[in-house]
Amino acid sequence: MGFSGFALVGVVFSCLLVATSAGNFYQDFDITWGGNRARIFKGGQLLSLSLDRVSGSGFQSKNEYLFGRIDMQLKLVAGNSAGTVTAYYLSSQGPTHDEIDFEFLGNVSGDPYIVHTNVFTQGKGNREQQFYLWFDPTRNFHTYSIIWKAQHIIFLVDNIPIRVFKNAESIGVPFPKSQPMKIYSSLWNADDWATRGGLVKADWSKSPFTAYYRNFNVTSFKSTTSLSDAGLLTNELDAHGRRRLRWAQKYFMIYNYCTDLKRFPQGLPPECRRGRFL
Ligand SMILES: *[C@@H]1O[C@H](CO)[C@@H](O)[C@H](O)[C@H]1NC(C)=O
Ligand SMILES: *[C@@H]1O[C@H](CO)[C@@H](O)[C@H](O)[C@H]1NC(C)=O
Image (cartoon, rainbow, N blue to C red; front, side, top):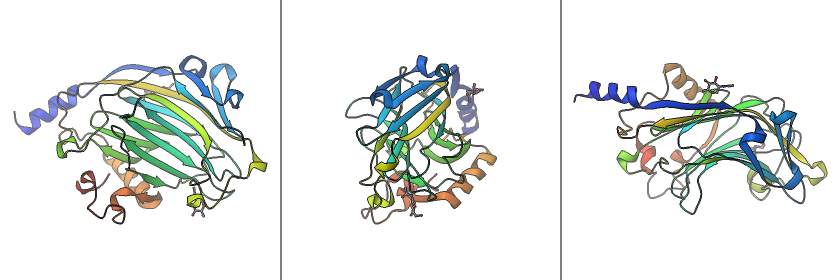
């Protein structure tokens, strides 16, 4: 079969939508730690996590997903959030787990949060990209999304793609595609590294630190991976999406493992050499 025939079949079969749900925190999530530092309000429409001197808190989804789109609106810890990390991620279980991460690293009042992203496959990460945001994430709710398909993972902020991690199995890079993942979130103290590399500590006189969650929406995909030559299935972003991705990466990216030659003196990871490291 010629290239165009193959690509067409790929587009037709690449993704079938099976279920979408816009949710209720009571129904779809369990509070997993932190006791009453994690709370669900408004009949399940709003959730908050908090952190004090003694403990942080966290929750996880009841269901697990193999491919899907997850949207969540977060309003991050306001004021002096230095030393705090709010993590929102997908993860499977066990020592060879896969994981797709958003982590929000707090800062002193008026200084910017860092959005840290990473992708782990079979227990190995080391694929960080970090960004500043183009708004104050503590004033209002904003939507943070992960699109996870067999061909790629896309991180979005208010529907603007900030990062695409492509399936590069064809050049030997493992990709998360067989272990179902749950959705997790937690708020904890990471003042040994989070803010200016650990220079700025949490100010416990300002605690408890609180982050809010609402309007999560999970759309689970069932994906046929038999045609999974990712190289051929490159329909991830249209021209508009690619323009916005370039904008976010040009103006807001502050760290990219793919350009960190000091860290990889033996040579950059193979996925970084595939044309542009999207
Ligand atoms: C949930 O997400 C899906 C897929 O992006 C979208 O079609 C649907 O309108 C969303 N539902 C809500 C309630 O936001
Ligand atoms: C906090 O603010 C400082 C100074 O503007 C900045 O260098 C740093 O990247 C910001 N974010 C974090 C999480 O440290």
